[in-house]
Image 1 (tube, rainbow, N blue to C red):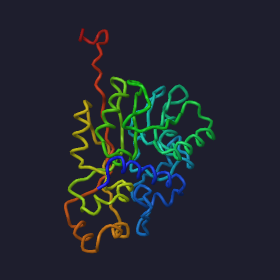
Image 2 (cartoon, rainbow, N blue to C red):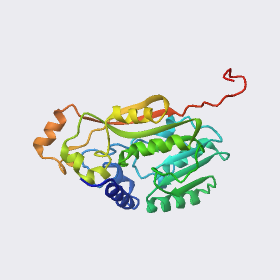
Image 3 (cartoon, rainbow, N blue to C red):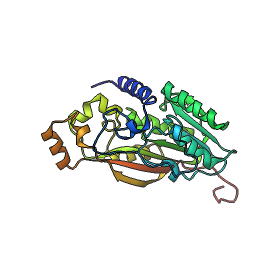
Image 4 (cartoon, helix red, strand yellow):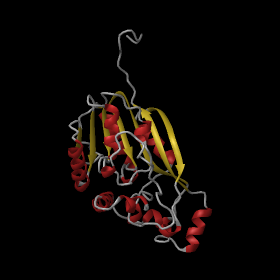
Length: 279
């Protein structure tokens, strides 16, 4: 098994390659992992094209949900996007915050940051910025964000609890997040869990849904809600890169399931406001 640092380096290298791939290649694979499928198109990604602020140059087809659709972003909000890629979710978020808001994308892949900055410059946005950094140690001061969004990113992070704690730190009291991610119900076959390439393809980096929600609860968040959930089916021609025919059949007949979920939660606001009755 690779160490956490080795896995993070693997993700960084893979997503540097993905930044140069076309959208069709990324959407027909597992989060752009390169194990493309002829059986289905668009395994995980959702259709952004009808959302205001959508920009085709920023859409690499890497998401597994539409967190901005559920994030309750308001005019003037400060929004942080974790693992911002080429900027797709940031630009959709910006259409909701308006000129008075601010959107900060964070990514630890330089190729993605460069691509996102180029897209922002072409669009002429001066209230969208992209910061190079690790979402386990965000380059952002505490209590600065009204909203956090993220799309199919935490499953790539070995120490997910660190990211969730950081989310709590950078959100303002009363702030909230809406994040889409890949989670599991039941255990994946060992070969899939132990394959580094599959890790970069999102799936083997995913954890049990109950554990995922437990981490959010333990970090201090409240009003935890699953806003959307769907089953992810990985085609045979991707599975055969990791499993034999009999192992594929065994996996399909097992209780293991792979899901895309969009989760919402709020950071409590313990401040005492005049007239609230708490003073």
